[in-house]
Length: 131
Image (cartoon, rainbow, N blue to C red; front, top):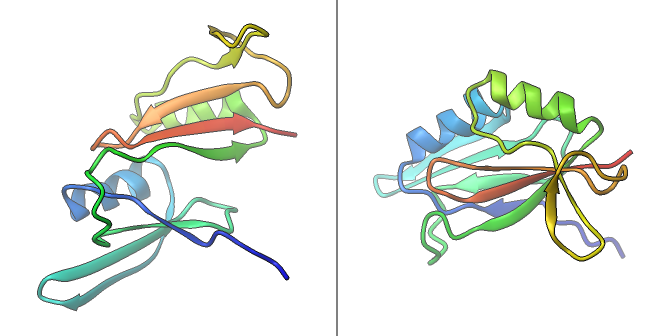
């Protein structure tokens, strides 16, 4: 039996602004933008190459900005960081974890290089390099 995570709901305050951030700033694909009725609209977006999507507009009961630490794995942390910065996303420098658990600037081993950023509502995302 396979168990796959397919869609993660992300609570946002403004669907249109969030859609623009994820599609224009991050470069994610808009899979669908569905107006179910006057009160319900769902937008699903997928990072390029990902098997997992996010959905905005779904009532989750969670406050906008409350999702933290969802990781996106990339092949090249510097290239991914540069792409986001060029698109106007505020991104952290490349960081890594020391043996004592502290977070320091600079690359770590291939699995231990990270970049952090937030969406417009403060939902926190992490890029992790893996080869």
